Image 1 (cartoon, one colour):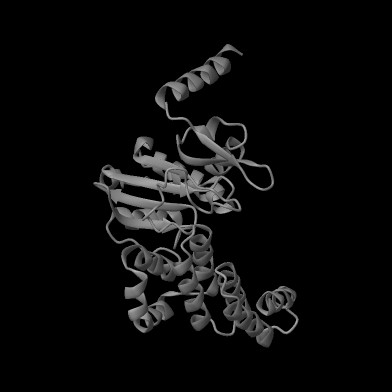
Image 2 (image 1 turned 90 degrees about the vertical axis):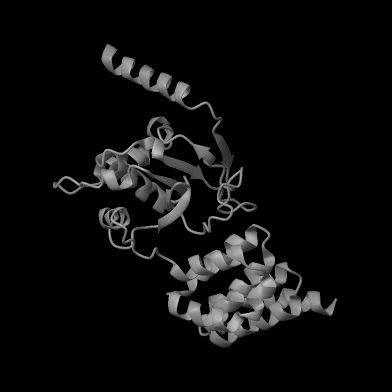
Length: 298
């Protein structure tokens, strides 16, 4: 009995002495506690709440029997890992990524974990804004950097499988990450003014037409922007989605919601009527139309 207790005490001692930064938590609408901001990796292993899923996926992840010789290629790489302790994909892929990293013989100190919010007021942001300018709209996001400059990323899940994706990155041939359209548009928003984007709206649409696979890509990005008070970008994102997927009622519903939040009730009404043209029994659209008609009459 002494050995396990001694190991637990050592783990606690090492944890408290190796990481002095305070860990931030918040509670979502359900009252569940989650991590927000930068925090130490080993906290996921020792905390009673998070260790259950972290250790499960870590232990279950099967690595190739043949030894992976990629350490020399990644020894100068750092990886910023943006995740949500509320997110199913984060719970699955972060432990597996850590196990692969360990197997390669790389240092865990090369990994930087940042937990993101997911509540009514804050969506996929962190207390100190670590995600700003990083185009984070899906989690987990593994951002590979050399000398502080990004050279590859894995978004939400591997493009092929985790071992293959990391090997390709190590060898200098990374796959394009998932959600290529949303990734591209987010970077445009972060590097150009709305006025400049409006002037080049048609060329942007043509690029996105080739990069965007489904309506959920820009829909999620739109809500990330909307919930973080980037209303102009959100409106443009939702508008572009209506051109890309003109027969999908949900894209008009989302655009209508954003317009309504921005006080553009007449335009919002048109969007919800468009929803009914495609889906005549859509209950949300019917309810929103009634409410908007009252607001417009006043």
